[in-house]
Amino acid sequence: MTGHKVFHIPFAKIYPLYVEKAERKGRTKEEVDQVICWLTGHDEVSLQKEIDRGIDLETFFTQAPEIHPNSSLIKGVVCGIRVETIEDPLMQKIRYLDKLIDELAKGKALEKILRQ
Image 1: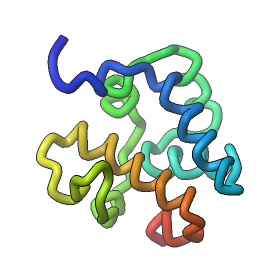
Image 2: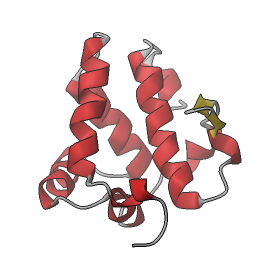
Image 3: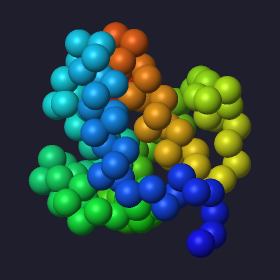
């Protein structure tokens, strides 16, 4: 096993936690899916296929259709670390998603979350 432990966590275990966090704050599963699809280039069907496959976070991000070009506009702190300063590209993508879900749960408008 190489890299951080988080790389090997199945995406299917993390996904319901994202949905739960958002729903606790009055947001929806559909909004979580929209955020994930924006970042990774998946559509709803391919996202569900990846969840069903049980792939880990590393595979989820390395095989993502296309990381959104505006993802570099995601700034802020997750787990005490500024996402824009993370050097490992895979860890940065994982933290980008964490940051987007945090913004969603905090009530930020989708247009702002999706950097439109």
